[in-house]
Image (cartoon, rainbow, N blue to C red; front, side):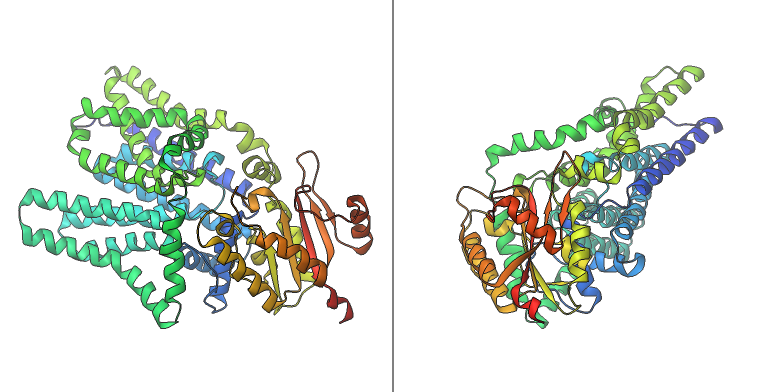
Length: 546
């Protein structure tokens, strides 16, 4: 048996912990509701906005459309602002925490569930995993953990209907991001493992069949929709052909170094909670209850880790995918710690209070400057450096004021959030420059395609983002798009705005004619993408004649 918290006072302590952590989470997230959209959020919001208007976005994205549908729902329910998106993230985060609590309670006991849910709220709040931004991983784990919980209920009750619904939720998680396929594989493996114990092969195949059909149903629906709309070839190229190319760009020998660099800030921010998780992993040695559940716990740990490995990119927000299982082991570790502590009631209570400190004081102290002192702009700069996310809002206001609803714009850079903020459609299907700069056989063809799309649509405004992280140039990147843009802009466009980005001072905006003339004189009329970190805004020359 796992150690129980029997006294009324100790149970009250547990619920006080849960309420304090929830209040802390809400307070901090409300502080940063106004953080500007980053690039991925910009894509999801733009695509979601297009879906809201009844259009199937003609945009190349290697993600399946689940996250775009999620954002369409968010924009419909909460509103079409960046703060509304982050408010929806808050509710999603709390809901996921509750699901983790239910899994911990069902698998072990109520204290494990409470500690696990609280740990999840604290760890996903951290800027080390870009926690204030509504990346797809937050929504993946909501559906994945919901699916795993339903699977547990179905297996306990021998209910095939719940197994099918479990598969549906895990299929939806895959639609949001392909990485979630590992959670579905975990579910499949766990069902097979449990049913093999019964040695009833008919029962095994029927239950696995219901689960697999559930997983495949959302995927088949999306494929059929793309067939019906004539977009299947484009859909298949981006979601599978290019995606497989993308995950093969980084060689395995670089994986360990990339993992260490990305995980180090996560470890520093949540060291004591992760230490508690490690204790939970090791507790299999003395905790019989944990030992009896090791297949589920360690299976989920292995497959959660596999979910962050495709491509060996290990971006900070990828680690959100392992936070549920880390949190579950933190709950196990907390209760196992009590079993190792002295049995005397007073000492045991003090041990419990030490764990409360691990949950609240340590993460609070380590991140106190980030969570309590920094402003929205400071936390954005701290997390994303000189990427033009703060500046995108003002730039979008300028674009919106100087264009009509039906006008299109183009961005030579990877800043799709500007399309969403300005509510103007992209003149090209390429929202990011990254696929065009990567070293693969499709890159030059993509550049040619983008050039053709821009020339055919003749956007009223073209933005050129001179920020390296908006391009990610590589040694062998084709310069065809760059060479074309300089001649095309000189011939058909003139500069109408510029925004200089700097760490040392607030960004400087040049929008009116006099300001632009002064700015151009400072550059000595020499436009070059290798200059400062600047966003250049060009408008069609014939706009002045209308």
